[in-house]
Every structure is written in structure tokens, then in C-alpha cells.
Image (cartoon, rainbow, N blue to C red; front, side):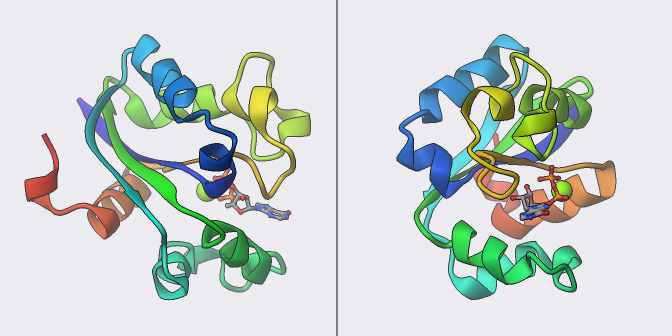
Length: 137
Ligand code: IDP
Ligand code: MG
């Protein structure tokens, strides 16, 4: 069993598709084992995306991520990290496969509805960044 961090970004919350996104995870066999809604502070968002801080889009990404509340979740399942990435689709919705969350709902490469950890190391860092052991089930 593997665990991964999922975030429904502010655009997903604004579009009122929390249930739709979670339903896709559940139908694919991923289980929500932790969940909370949170309006990230600038410091929290910058710490989460620290790996991207030299990228030209960093400032804009942080502004977007703190523009409204997000839904933070830990998903559990066999191959959860890759399975979640497949359900999400490519970063740029223009490149995303049919039937993926980003293809169906995302407006741009920045406002792309969901985050998902990309490897076991990032999944470990990211799940612990937002959840304590006592908050997971
Ligand atoms: P990922 O979310 O598919 O893993 P990353 O490359 O890790 O994509 O980028 C993190 C987030 O930064 C993306 O989900 C997106 O919101 C934003 N982003 C990535 N590339 C660009 C870009 O070229 N312009 C604007 N925003 C970007
Ligand atoms: Mg990434």
C-alpha cells in the first residue's frame, strides 16, 4: 500500500467540483485516509513548492495557491502515486489525455485543479508537511 498527497487547488474548490474529483479517486480504488480544507498562507505555500522557487512562474503559482481555500488529502492504494498522476493528467491541460481531471476541468497550465506527489520521496515530504500521524486513518 502506498500513500500520496492530493490537493484540490483553489480553482477546483471555486468550480464546486470537490465531490467530482474525490469520486474519480474512489472509483479508481484510491481511498481517502486524511482530508481537510485549508486556506494556505503565503509561507505555507512557499514551503510546499520550495522545489520550484527558482522557476519564473513561482510568484504567480504562490498567488494562485493562496487565492482561496484548498482541499488537502492523503490517498492510499496500490501504486497510489502513479495512479493519482494518471487520473490528474499532464500539467498543461492542453497536453492531458481525454478523461483526465485536468483535461476535463483545468483552464491553464497554472490553474490546473489538482496537485499530486510525483515520487515516493515527495509523497513522504508532502503528506507530512500537511498532516500529522494522528490525522491519518
Ligand atoms: P505538476 O503539478 O504536474 O507536478 P509541476 O511541474 O510540479 O507540475 O509544477 C507545479 C505547478 O506549478 C503546476 O501544477 C502548475 O500549477 C504550476 N506550473 C507548472 N508549470 C507552469 C508554467 O509553465 N507556467 C505557470 N504555472 C506552471
Ligand atoms: Mg509537481
